[in-house]
Length: 237
Length: 237
Image (cartoon, rainbow over all chains, first blue to last red; front, side, top):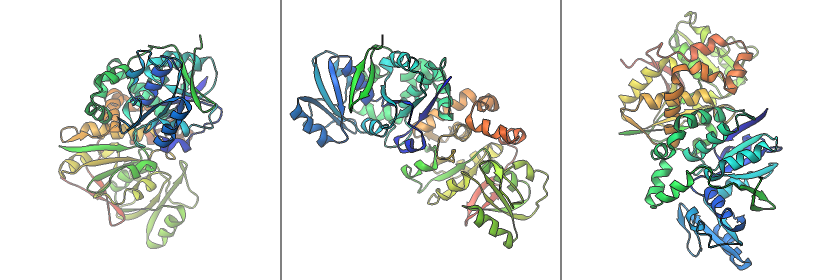
């Protein structure tokens, strides 16, 4: 049996071995959910940028640019961090450059892994199927919030540990804990998350419909994967 | 209402504000459980040492010395890290110097808090009563395991958040998550923890009876508190 473990913060990633593993980076509200929505709706490639300036400069190379800081669209950017902006399919066959508060950092700190995937509820089962075809250990890397444990990322991690249980054993205490928590709270994610600090922050930005999207399971059959510094969609089946 | 939050690892403590708060340091297997057992059985004062050499040197000042590394009694020490060693009351009115892998580090990294307590299941309710008499915010500082999230410390944290709910609101996502997990798994802590990596390590050292002790609620009515670099017992009632 393969193994699955969870890292709850990019500040703890140095305590985990990356080599040989599939790392699934998770930033549910909203970076990785938005990436999955974009790839499912015509975006061919996503470049993740570490800062706003790098991202802004990609406009000259025919990239759409999406930038967010502290949950709000950054000045001068075409797109913010709402997954809903992509759902009408307005951006067919375009490339996207994107930077976010926590998600981009978690991706860059996952370099060294055998494969890096992007996790979100709307493509959970597709990610599970892909992982189960690969026979590798899995490390779920939660982006967290400013270095701290974050409820929605951790619950996604628990959902993924649960969904992998036929092939992957919970290797560390974090995986055991979050699998159990998801078993208890997974039937009403939104209700449970409404207590969370992050949900309260998001409510301030009037993005209730974003939250609904980010918590919806299995809308898409694609897998988001980092290849040559860009994120692309795979369709395993 | 006051607030309660959880830090899952000493490596994340810099992300939390300590000032003005009661910090409860937790290292269930076994440092803080052993400290509580010692204070309840005649030890008058515990000096926590950052390394084995410092601890060993305390023998010349009439301290009993207890040292453990990676779960095993260190060479040349009178006591290891088993709480059971104190239960016969052999060490009445003696002072103890103690160093452990994770627990001592978490205490030293809690300096700056308004008050530092030691948390363990055998004195949970006493700790709750003391905190509720103080009207301060609480930060639960889990010692973890080599910097990583640890199941037994986190479950104690959840139990404490739950027990404080009349006076303290869960302030961060960690507190919300662990309160819920304790509600689900608290009725059979040993069964749930038997899945954990740490429990597997402890089984290798034949300390099943230590585990039983460490998971027993409310054997003692004392509070363990750091005062002037030493740990002492308070009896609030």
